Image (cartoon, rainbow, N blue to C red; front, side, top):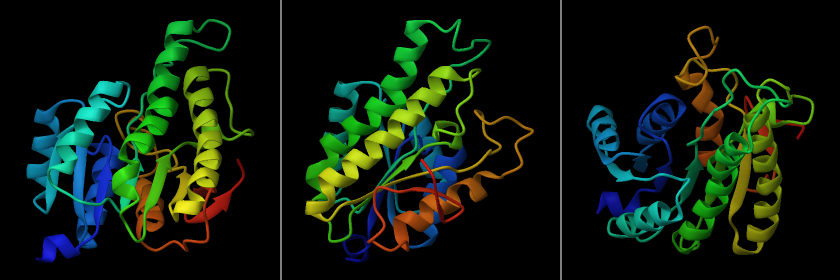
Length: 233
């Protein structure tokens, strides 16, 4: 009975880094957590490490069929979804700049980091609509803010800039359904993407996402956050 009464969150890319720390934080607050990874093995390994009320699901957000299969798998376990944290993302900008990057790399980043998030919300909307307190958190980046764009990470910056725009549009579209949508910047975090010299731990990076998922005022939607404070798009 307790599992049915507890709130449920889904974290994409929850097998490592900020996603894993987010899942850990939500478990500590009593949430049932669905963690996704591109392989079921990785999701299952992370679920075993987390040792809580965790459901592992395979998901590649760059693939519509994978998103639909993940939705079908998730529906077998839950009737409603309270929190969707769109954390999965890629950073393909190695040794390129805005003058040398290929269309293929640009496509890859925006397909995963932006279009994947939009599609996740579209597909999982029937479960979010059944929650009394539905919240969507899109993990973005300060490199997607207008004053944070850099020429040396073109596909990543543009994909996160577009994600922030999508967040505003989704918040407007879902306000009538009572679904709150925000984006957040975790800061520069020690992860596979962020590298070893980053100053923040994954736990510090996950803090604002957990706060938005659990405590933030529901009146705040369509906003961009860092360290629990609103920042400029």
